[in-house]
Image (cartoon, rainbow, N blue to C red; front, side):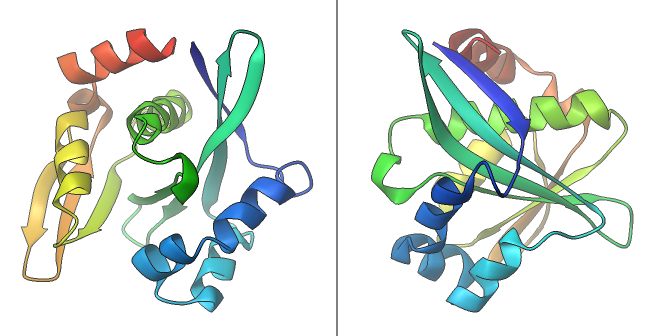
Length: 165
């Protein structure tokens, strides 16, 4: 198994992005409505978008999408998605590590921010294992940050070796 990350191209990834836009669970869970889902796919000046492809036995399959948007304070917010029908298979961990690894290869001094709803403790635990450090927590959400030094940890190295990164 090999996990690859490549830049997002709307014309090449149309059907995959369509899966995500029409995924009711993602719309409700991550965006609250369709209009905000569509905003995710619109191009912005200060962002980097990627698609994660899993290669297994010569067959390539798109498994996730991620976007890093630059904030006013020069940090980058991450938003990533695995279509609902292929969730709970470990793809989120593999693609998350692959996306962040790829991003840090191009922006080694960047700081990545991650936000999760408070009820989504599973997402918070995953980001914490990747090295994210909790910066704020309230009854609604978790907010954490990651540097390339924090990302270089034993858990991430294990995932990289398993995913062929």
